[in-house]
Image (cartoon, rainbow over all chains, first blue to last red):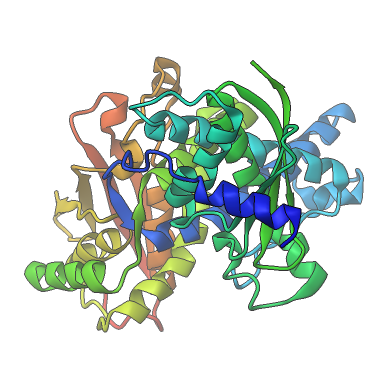
Length: 231
Length: 188
């Protein structure tokens, strides 16, 4: 047994937060969320592309309302996102647009995380220790988000935590279609949202962190939390 | 008729639907609306985007409904309205808006949402109310998109919403055109 997996075993067995705090809330169909997510990503992409096109036309003194076909500016700004039959979107090639899409999705997630933390924070004890807060994410929050807990939690005990989900729910439907790099690329936006959610949850407990995703092969996904400064 | 659809809808909800806590959905939608408001700074554009998003959901969601039920083609708008409410809304959001206020020509009706999950936790700032935001406008798009796929071109819009201070939430649906090859007879 490696040192790493020993740490993991210990951490996971220590995952015994209050749990019973789960609120019996309203229920909806899971497919409602499954329909919403890809369209949310599509909307963020297409509105970002559109905003950039309008800004570009304004800067050239052109009428922003004219049809994009007559657009004489940079071609890449016109790469409207295309929804595929499956509902997943091709990401824009333009790296500036892609960066903005990332920021927006992460921000959308951040707000969700803040609100979820407000709803589900343990009532009978206050979480102050960063490890306890991360465990709260791994267990309670993951249950609310994905109806399961993370499979693996590692830490270097110096502010870095790695959460591993071997069957990341939002990937499950993607992996069957096309494998490889194309799928991994398309899957990216679906990790930006939970990155924001995790950061939002941490933030509401006063932990300032950077959260980044890594996908080695669908449907596996890891999230690295790097604490920036605490307290 | 309404009863039959009610029981189909409830049966589907009970036995054929994977259920999850609604809050992730509700908060995610709310956060998207906030983002669109930041992007556009104009509530009518936000309404438009939400409707468009809903439309794209609707055109795909109809298959989900049809594949989980053995529905026959509706013979008129009154049946269609019941299916939207008792099966469509029930299947996804576990609500069944009441159908009312039919026009004389039976082409136009209202869906009254006594209980709209999207409105949970939602408080609109006065600015958004004055600016004309229809917070749940996505629902209009969904209905429009789904009906278009079965050959019914409709106009769908919110006319009242409790989060705007109205007494009830009301979506108005009007049949504009029936696409010939898709649906046998309209409603006359």
